[in-house]
Length: 435
Image (tube, rainbow, N blue to C red; front, side):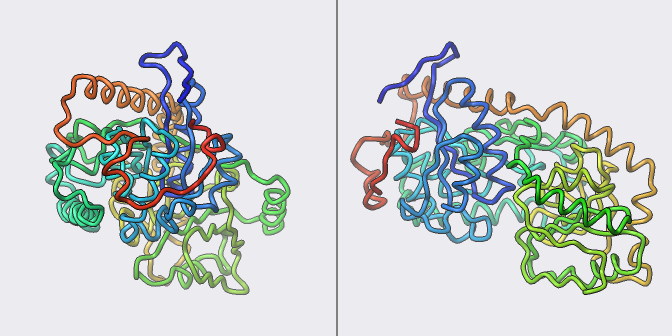
C-alpha cells in the first residue's frame, strides 16, 4: 500500500471516519477529518448511504456501510441494538481500506471493538459534556436525570454484551478500566460546562465545537427569510431532538407561538409526527444546516442536545432548554449552571410565552452566552482534535514496535481471526481513497 510521507511527526496514516451518520455526530467527525486530510493523511468516511452527499460536499471519499453488511449500523436512533452489525461493517471496511486508525462517535461500541480486533487505535468524538464518571470530584453535581454512575454502568453493560456478541469476550480488553473512551475521547464543549471541581479522565480532551455543516441552499434560505420577514415578529429558533417517551412538545409550542409576540422556525430534526397548529406563527423546516437559521433568531429553544447548544452558543445566543431524556438533562443542567440558559417548562402554562419573554429580556444571560460563545468560537479549530488523533496514532505505532500489547494482533489485510466477522464486501478501495 503506497503512502505519502509529508513532513509531519510519524508520517501519513490512513484514517477511517466511522461516526454515527446523523448530522450531530457526522459533521464534527468531518471537521476533524478535513484538517487531517489537510495535513497529508488519507481520510475516508464509512456511514449510511444517505450520508454520501454530505461526505462528497466535504471532499472526503465515502463508503456505504450497507456494502459491508452494516444496514442501520450507524443510525443514532438504533445505536443500542446495532453494535454487532457496526462491528462487522467496520472491521470489513477497515481491513479492505488498510486503515491505520479509526475516528468514531461516542456510544459506537461496534467501532471500539473493531479497533481492538484489528489492533489499531480509535479516537472517540464525544458530546459537549462528559457523559460518564469523573476521575475525581463531581459528587455534589445536581442530578436532573440519570446519575453518572447509573449511566456509566448501563453503557458498560451494553459494551460488554456487544463484546460477547462480537466473539471478543475471551480476550483481555485494551482498556479494561475505561473502555468507552477509546484511545482518546474528544469533548466539544468548554470546561465551564463540567461540574465545578470535577476531574476528567486522563484520556479526555477538550478540543472545541468542531463546527462544520453543509452549505445552506441559498434559495431555501431566502424563502425562510421571506417568511419570517412577512410576520415581522422576533424569531426563536427551535431545534427538536429525539423524544424518549416524554410526550409531544407540540401543545406547548402551539400555545407559545399562537397570538404571541414571537414566531418560531422549528427544525424538526429527528423528531416525528409534527403538529403545528394552523394559526400558529411556526415555520416547520427540515434542513441539513442550522447556522444561518440561528443567525435569524434572538434565542434558541432546544431539548439540550449538543449540536444546537453549541451552534447557538458560538453565535452568542441565549438558550431556552426543555430536556427530555438521554444526555439532554445533563447538558441542560450544565447550561443552566453556566448561566447561559433559562429553563422552559414542557407543560402548557397560563402564560406560555412568559418564560421566553423572560429569557429574551435577561441581559445577564445574554452577556454570559456571549462570553462563553467567544471562548467556543476561539476554540472552534479542528487543529486540537487533529493533534490528539495524530498523537494516538504515534503512540500506537510505538507500542506495536515495542510489542507491549497483551492481546492478539490481526492487522488489516491479514487473515486469521478478523475473517470471523463474515465475508468481506467487494468494493473499489481506490474509490474510498485509502489505498
